[in-house]
Amino acid sequence: MEHLTFELVGHRAPPNFDAVLVGVVGSGNLEVLMERSTDPAHCTFSIHTSARGFGPIWEAVVQNFQAQHSLAGVAVSINDMGATPAVVSLRLDQAAASLPGGEAA
Amino acid sequence: MNAPLSFAELSARQRVQHLLDAGTFTEILGPAQRVVSPHLALLGVPYAFDDGVVIGSGMLQGQPVLIAAQEGEFMGGGVGEVHGAKLVGLLRRALLVRPAAVLVCAESGGVRLHEANAGLIAVSEVMRALLDVRAAGIPVVMLIGGANGCFGGMGLIARCADHVVMSDQARMSMSGPEVIESSHGVEEFDSRDRALVWRTTGGKHRFLMGDCDRLVEDDVAAFRQAAAALLGVSRALTLDGLLAEHQLLTQRIARFEGCSDAVDVWSRMGLEHPEQVTDMEAAQMQSLRNEHVQEAV
Image (cartoon, rainbow over all chains, first blue to last red; front, side):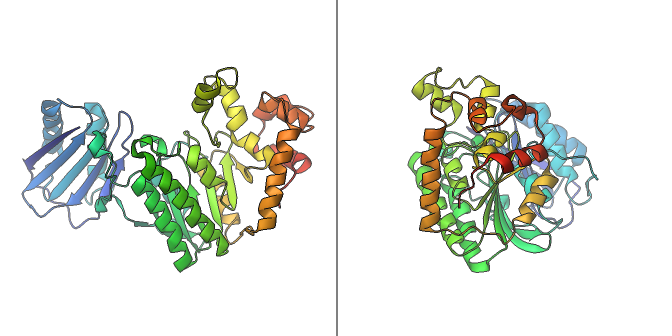
C-alpha cells in the first residue's frame, strides 16, 4: 500500500453538494469520493493504492484532470486496487460529471 | 416496456437505486462517513469506504423497506467485521421501525478470510439478528443475482431468510466449487466445469429443489417485482416448521443418493426431459416446479 497526496490550484468551485462516489474497489478498478473542502483555492487528492512506486504517474494523471476541470473547494479521496491510468482518468471524469455544474448534473 | 437491465451487471449501489422507488433511498453509514475495515490496512490491502455493503431505507411501491446490497467486486463480497456489523445494525433497526420487509441483495463468497474470526463472528451475528427480525413477523427477502453467487456463511444466512429470489445465472451454496474440489478431489466436483457448477449450484436447480422460492430472469425489474410481491409476507418461524424441513432434507439425501449431476437429480424427480432444463425460461420453470416439488411447511 502507498499513500499519496497532491494539492492542485483550481478556479471552479462547485456550489454546495453532497458527497459523490463512483467506482468500486475491485481488481483493476478504484473508487473515487468527491467531497466539499474548506480550501476554496485548491483541489486536494488523497490516494491509497495497492500498487507501490507509481507516484509520478498518479501525479501526471491528477494534473491532467485538473488541467481539464480546474476544481476548487473539492477533496478527492481514492481507494485503488491497481487501476490503469486510463481507468483512473475515466473514474475522475465520471465523478466530476456528477458534481453540480458537471455535464451529468 | 424498457429493455431488461441486467441485475448481474449492476453494482451494489445501482441495484439499490433500481430496486427502490426513484429517489427514496437514504443511506446509513455512507462512504463519506468512512466506517472502514480496521483489518485490511494492517495487511496492506486497500479498503472501501463502505466496506463493500450499502445499507439504508427507502420505499418499494410506496411501502417502507430496509435494504442492504453487497458489492461482489470488492473482496468477492466477503463479510468482514464492519460489513457484518452494518448488516446486523440494519436488521436490528428493522425491529424498531418495522418495515414491510428487509431486502438483502446478497453477493458474497462468505467470510472475508483476511478478517478471519471477526468475519466468522459477524456471520453468526447476522444470522441471529435475521432470526430476531423473522420472529418479530417482519419478512427478510434475499435477492441473489450477482456473478459471484452467494456462498459460505452468506449462503447459510440466505437460507435463514423467509424468501430467496434468484436469477437463472445466480448461484447459492455452502461450500464453493473450488473448496469442494480441494477437499474432496476433482472426481467429487470439477470446479472448472462451468456448466456443471451452474447446473448444481445455479438458480434453476435451487428452484427445483425448493431452496429458492422464486426464479426470475436476470432483469432488475423482475427482481423488483418479485420483492414487491413478498412485502409483508412472512413465513412462520416455528419448531414444527424446522423439524419438517429437517425431515425434508433427510429424505432428499435418501431420494437422490448416488446422483453425480443435477441432471440425474432432475431425472429422479420425474422430469420427462431433464436435459432441457438448462435452456428453459424462468416462466417455464414455474410449471415444472408446481408439478414436481415438495414444499416445506
